Image 1 (cartoon, helix red, strand yellow):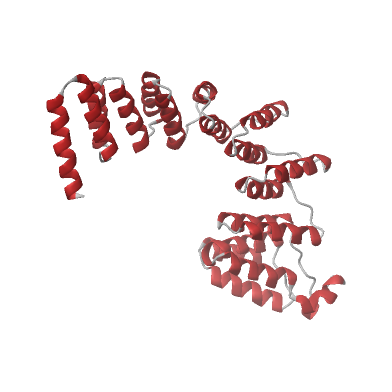
Image 2 (tube, helix red, strand yellow):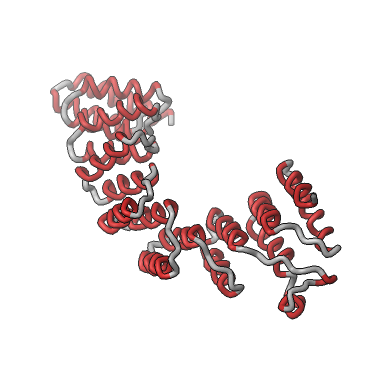
Length: 331
């Protein structure tokens, strides 16, 4: 009944009331369920910050250092049994720390979990691996992966996506592909995040053929790519002189998934068309770009001017020079 009351308060965003009810119960020797306290910690972290959430964790689970000896016997102050944190408690804290950029704190909580004899699960490993990936510590990631194997903890899709993303981030897409293949062999279906990591990884090392193949495979599976992924593919194709193909990617992304291309996609395509002397197509795309709310920058003006100069159209080039100067004066 009390757990339900606390949960109702949390759902109503009355977090302070939930804390006071929990404190009242604990002072009377009644302990809320671990799941209830985990939810409370998560809500406190989100509203008041990780430090406040950690204080609640210490208060409701550890009960201060002076209670340690009593806790070893299985009882807390005033005679009630101490409720112990479980793996979800630590996962909640690690997730909150990770989301707030406190990566050192994630490792601290991981160590604390080990010291308290709580076994991590696949999600726990995913969080620590995410921290190592963000810092480029891929050797540590692989050590954690091997540790999971030895403990016979089955990696889930989050674990695979995390380590695949980490290797793609440092440009080791070959190793990422190995994990991608392993993922399929163990029967875990790839998600849109899996494909996006690989596409961005191949774009990062300028392997346009592989990036296009993976992107097309993602498209066939009806995975909706992020606009930033589309931008990277379009940018790489334009850099490689494959402007027409890049234009098809933009149209298919808009048509099939209603994607809203970013400014960079329009800029890359306009520059590509201007470089090829296809000024009419560049102008149509420029009008579409402005219609989407994007403004022309100096770089776009310059490629248009250069394109018209190479066509021998000095009149249009001069008109654009004057327009560019006026834009500079008003900015």
